[in-house]
Image (cartoon, rainbow, N blue to C red; front, side):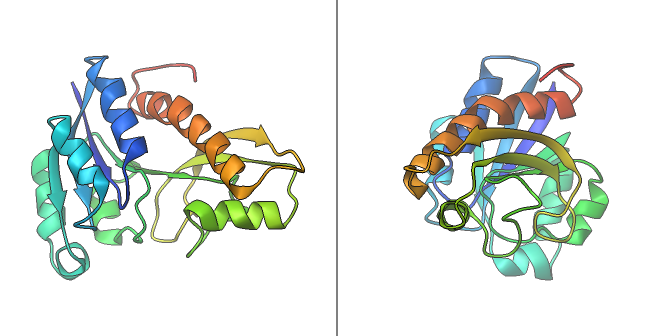
Length: 192
């Protein structure tokens, strides 16, 4: 049984989707959900789905090895960032090389980097009159959105689309592809 740990900062719809996906499969399980936001809905979602939900602060993430030590004890086969807004510390990436992945709501390298998350991305894409956007699932390094790309999926943008319309289309892609890409990275699936 492969072990998945999720980091999230917000509502946790992607985390919930991943947890439910693997609860139906039995070849992997989400063992922990970590959040840097005590009020994040993801903590309740995890708790309701019988997954350990843990909150941490900046000091325990960057200043000490508290989060790293809990991760070592959890022995994850993969660490999934699903709407996690802090830069991931190099000390954790070094202990789990090629085991930390992130999803970004645009086609990197466009619309990536610090401050480019959620509605900020969709508003920029619409403002620039792009013809398409999509999702990028990539390995995490010590820079925002610069790790090696694992998978991308696109969606066309109509000239009448708003940022909210685009957000809905992107969420559809996230829910469809994120769990299966996790399976592929874990070696549990050949095709996406």
